[in-house]
Image 1 (cartoon, helix red, strand yellow):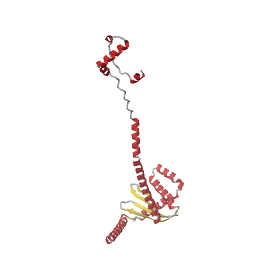
Image 2 (spheres, helix red, strand yellow):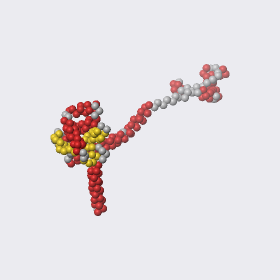
Image 3 (spheres, one colour):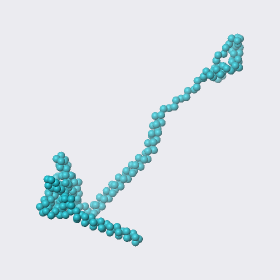
Image 4 (cartoon, one colour):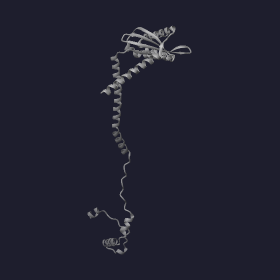
Length: 255
């Protein structure tokens, strides 16, 4: 029990250290813009952009996005699409609460606007970078402020959807595997139906060799010759037996 408690405390301490380090790194990677003129420009640009986005009617957003894409303004189109994705959760725009501008270590800038909406607060960010023509906007982001209950509900729904998808795929695979035996039986039946039927064996014809063997039987030839001579009342000297064929028994029965 003591070892388990020690391990739990060790895990808690590690988590706290990681949180402190991440907070320190976040503070070190960005700093407030010192140039007052640049600071004001970034904040005003972000606020005006937010007001422009929220002023577009919901039923016209798709049309405006298509027009922006045709004019090759994909950055503004993506920002407006991001606003379209969160507008149902935020509700109507109320007012700007505060704004600030920070500079990152890589030389880029962020203008952050905290705004109030009917349903919740939203953190709106505009990202800038320096180029040959001056400052250029690279992207936008909307981050609604959800409650703990809403976050847990979304996490549970995402977990349920993920697990449900996995189970559906597994069920589909198991059903597919169980169908293999029916597929194999169907293939065997198809092969059997396509195979040619064996040819019927014809009865072997009576060969001349068998007839010769009967003719060579001298006793049988003598008996048959005497019977024919007696039947015709003639001499057997003029009779020559050239072949002997066996007759079916049915004819002898009818005689």
